[in-house]
Amino acid sequence: MPTRVRLIFRVLSTFTLVEGMVGVLITLWNIIAGRRFYAFEMNTLIGSAYPHMWHIYAISCATLPFNLMFLVAGALLWNLDRRGLFTLICTLTAEIAIFFTFVFHNVLNGAHGLSNVQGFLVGLALFPVFPQILTAFPFVAGILIFFACRYIGIPARQVQ
Image 1 (cartoon, helix red, strand yellow):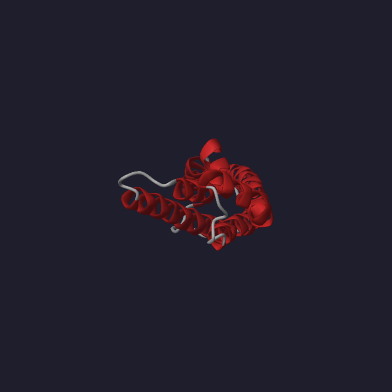
Image 2 (image 1 turned 90 degrees about the horizontal axis):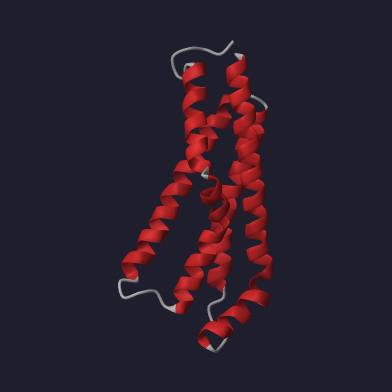
């Protein structure tokens, strides 16, 4: 494998593992701290405990598989496995699709503005994605994936 491709795989693997680990830690924090901290915030927002606290767990558990797939893709990329590129492409595509679906759904349903509870839940759902937005991970990964595919010659050549 050419040195450029090996370097791209290592950099992409490092970014993917860091983003996956940060996402897993934030998601686990949301799951563990849900009852204790978020019930207090719901009391502050609406004056009583929100009866449907399971939404917080559902949102957090929905983001956990994406972060775990980032860890899997990072490990495959570190081993210079081409399946890591495919796993990362699929995970990024699915996460971006789910992210935009969630945002557009809440924007369209909240035409008159989101309530305090809906706004809190939207912010909570987007919180594990925030490090990726902050570091522009999908864009950087997309550029590195493009260069890796170009240098490898996917799907035209076999890697030796």
